[in-house]
Amino acid sequence: MTLELTSLALLTEAAARLDQGFAALPAFQPVIDPARMRDVLQEVAARMQDNYPYPHPLYAGQMLKPPHPMARLAYMLALWINPNNHALDGGRASSAMEKEAVADLAQMFGWTTHLGHLCGGGTMANLEALWVAGRLHPGKKIVASQQAHYTHSRISEVLQLPFQAIPCDDQARMDLAALETVLQTGAVGTVVATMGTTATGSVDPLPALLDLQRRYGFRLHADAAYGGYYTLVDNLRAETQAAYGALNQVDSLVIDPHKHGLQPYGCGCVLFRDPEVGRLYKHDSPYTYFSSDELHLGEISLECSRAGASAVALWATQRLLPLVHGGEFATNLANCRQAALQLAAKLDADPRWQLAFDPDLDIVIWAAHATSASRISALSRAIFSAAAEVNLHLAVASFPADLLRQRWPDVLWDEDRVFCLRSCLMKPEHLDWVEMIWQILTRVADELEIGEHAR
Image (cartoon, rainbow, N blue to C red):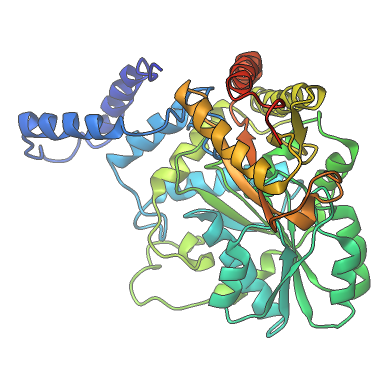
């Protein structure tokens, strides 16, 4: 793997221009020791080699998408100023860039009016959305599917609100009949719709959830942290496409630009359809908000200090790659989806493998054919290790037996969970590498005699 280094020359050029903006100040030069710093940086570089090759297309395991070079450069450039986007005193330019970038995200979902801001990540974004929901429906239950991110149950505990997990159907989506049974109790204040689960990529049936909302009056929050950007692509199944088409009707949603948005970690976003929820954030600060009559981002955020560099990086990336249907960003994302479809088709056509779910987005879950859950799990672990030895990096994920009984009716369920192989084909380059990934999988299957000794 070769790291992209040519763009560093652009950073030097941009840093010189940034420095010109402060030329009127008296001369000041911080004292540094380049020789000592070089020694430490070389040590850091050596230590950082102890990583999986996350930027390479043969890394197809966990949900790790490399930042775009534009995001890296803009983030590093902003660090010379190190703005804090809590109040305008700490980050005037970066706060303005955050508002513009967040407005672009809201527009992507069809919202021309909104309230929103960046967060430290999806967990904090979901916390804020559920905190608002709890203020509007005090003491009422929050529900999400059993395949929803574990953060929802933890956040509910933090907020001291009751939480209940709703069973899933055989495609790992929220079971509507099971949900309605819970709704009939009248105890539910908020339903979380997951727009792309982090385990399987499954998208909850949002149009049907909106129908239930009209009948039962709960607040509907969409966790689109991973899958939200897929609203821009057109190669989804009709059912999934309909779910994204209904996103503009939810009460709140979160999206993580540090997933498909090509950003460094530490960049999530929470959005509210009704700006009036901003009143719930109202608080006083004796020294923070007096430099401007404009809205300070800290006035609509539970977080205090936040890296303005995240906003600068996001703004720059969206400037380079606008969030529009048919644009370069959307096309690259559609390539990720197409890569998943191609890999799933190859697996489905080979009798040695069995799909666990039909992919909704760009995550593929599968396993070797075997007669028992315990044997499937053992083979998944063996394939994971053998593939890594030849530089194909997958992931292993476990699922409850009840989720796969219908899909795999011939399996002896001697264990209540089964381990499967999981690939997140999140890089647009994965489309060009599906064939190599498949060749390596085939070689590993031959070496492990998958299919011959699967029993």
